[in-house]
Length: 92
Length: 203
Image (tube, rainbow over all chains, first blue to last red; front, side, top):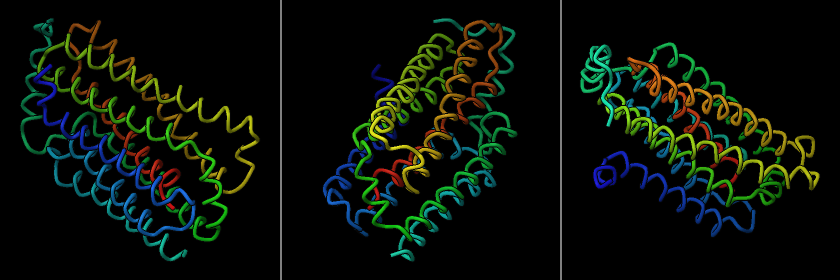
């Protein structure tokens, strides 16, 4: 049990869970009025990008994968979130 | 603690060495082509959602207010926890510790199975209140994207049952099969993380 708690993967999970709660609180706090809020949106989208990258690197074990796989998956995260933020701000 | 059968030693050894070495592709590479393809397809949906959102801000914001953020957040934690036990189970299987691998995959399956159950607690009250895919553009995206995702969850749960069977009954558990299934399950997790931010959190 102690070994499980000390496992780096469990630490990654704790981090992912914490930021999930934090981003929900950000949405509740800053976005309860359901009005456009660029700060909330930028924060929750950036947090989601970091979470996706953490799952890909640590849970999917891409951190130990060949460069082409690291580049493709991280490229997906970067391009996707750049487009999402770009379209969000362009649509304001 | 059950050790893997002797006959499987080579497979386990090979996988252990590979996992320790740099440049190991976890599982079958054809699964990775599927995963990347799926990420791209969902990516198009995500960007399409954002484009239409830009044209109908008021509608999207008002519709979002009807979603159950609590269930969305709890479901995110369910999938993250399930993914954690999948990767821990994969590590145990690789180390040849079949008992621990089985235990962890059972836990992963339980957390994973909670996702569709909670989704029903979300969908049923919404649909009963007349909030259906035809209501507006936001709910069309909401039901199509979460529905497609739910199909992925269902398939992932079936794959996990096959992993459990492989670990339980096979004389020589195939580590590459475990890794392939695990890769798919984590992709389901990644897609949900984006959906959660787009549908429930952003303003």
